[in-house]
Amino acid sequence: MSALSERLSPLRKETLQDGVFRRLCELILEGGIAPGQSITVASLASAFDVSPMPVREALTRLTETGALTVISGRTIGVPKLTRARLDDLTRVRLDVEATATRWAAARPDADFQADLSRILARLRHAEATSDTALYVGANYDFHFRIYSQAGSPILLGMIERLWLQISPYFHLLRESGNFQISNSRHQALHDALATGDADAATAALVDDLRGAYDVLCDLI
Image (cartoon, rainbow, N blue to C red):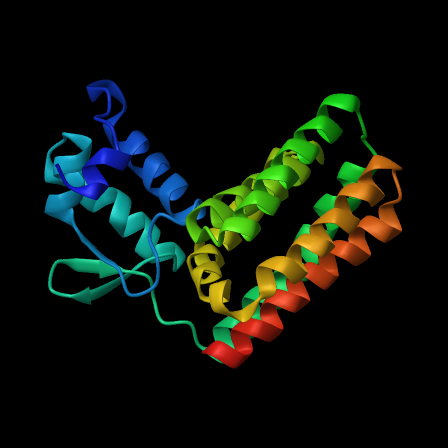
């Protein structure tokens, strides 16, 4: 069994088209497809235990959003990150994700804060063990726990589409030392949200996004 097959269990037949698309989105958002890695319709169909048709449809939708691109023939992968694309993605993320953070700060509760604390502990562990895959997944969980707290499915959907385009490149941050710096910003974000300080939370979020942007600019 391939590594891809181990990550992806078979889907129920009645949810094939949307199910394949949803699972591929999850795989991308959690860092399961890294820059330079390629996938094929056949490998995904085998992993999901489905026919090639729903896989092709899901990949078409993801290429249309810019999350994936055709590399050659039947091979699909993450598109090359250009400076212009990074600039555009970051500019939009700064506005949209800051808005979600501000809204989340206005809706504090104990479960929300407890969830953030648990995820922050995972981020610290990933940093200490240099576990990139764990860090990318925990980073996604941390940010999206905040964005979901904003209480806007429409805003959350917008952010998910942005992350589908940027999250694969978080693997490039591994050698930069950015995980440690980013975790200090995550801690500041966690602490600001604990007190409902929207301004401080938004400032910490903006610092985190701009920090990642600066590092990626040096790497591409």
